[in-house]
Length: 399
Image (cartoon, rainbow, N blue to C red; front, side, top):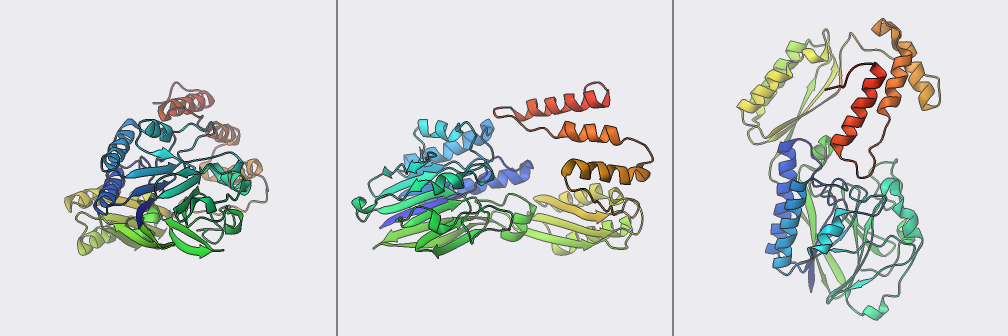
């Protein structure tokens, strides 16, 4: 029997809220501890181990420490890059971890034959994920290998892509199961942030879901971290989903329609006191058009103080559908391309701001439409962005 763990979409370093990032990292630590306790033979990490190609030093240190613990216990780790920790140059910090002997990067990104890695009890191949699904053309260009020479060894293909039938929405590009190489016992997938375990065209396609939810909506849907532990015996793979719950998540929904800001504030405070929020992650969703005032008149500072008094873990709010009657408007747009749409929206909203600044707005939109360059740090990118906006506004350097 061969026993292994399958992790994906860890996105270490992805949360910018310290309380949430600490949970994300703690979940990774718990997963590694579970792998050790379960005495797995090896661990698969199917892409997006880090949230970007240049993780912070603290994130990298923790990742290296936990992978070192696996190595010391004799547990191998196989990994591929995902669309987040992959760069166009092919450079990735996964190579640093591999060179330190902490994991084996099994990614193969050239068309043609798969690079097969053979170990004592398993053979593994993998393809990195790329931006906007570009890895799918690489996968389509692969030849199905002859795996018969490897006998009864467990055969695994690691991919970071979207398989048709698993798409969480219609916007994601997918590749058919029939288009990926055949003959493997287990297809260790990453990329889509949901649990998916299905036999398609004779191929066992498994997505364990993200190791920890990466945003507000994922916390609502998933609630906690997930990964898979699987066993291979007599030509069959048995998959068991593992859940890691370090903090409970609770959603508070408030209907603000036709209510004053002080009433909405009071209802939020009352809901927190009624339900109990100690040590919990609270997902606050407020929607509707206020009867008067601005959305900023809802006293979120006092709400945060009450949350802290009750010793909640983290308060996340979604007020994208909370509107003020003073600024509620609808604009009918007839343009078809993005630049003309921007111009039309600006022109039709000029009466609201009582000034003529369409030219300035177009320049500002262009100023914000820059991309972070490969290898550029966040602070350097932010400085470049501020400098450009300062020039457009004709002011000194922005703080």
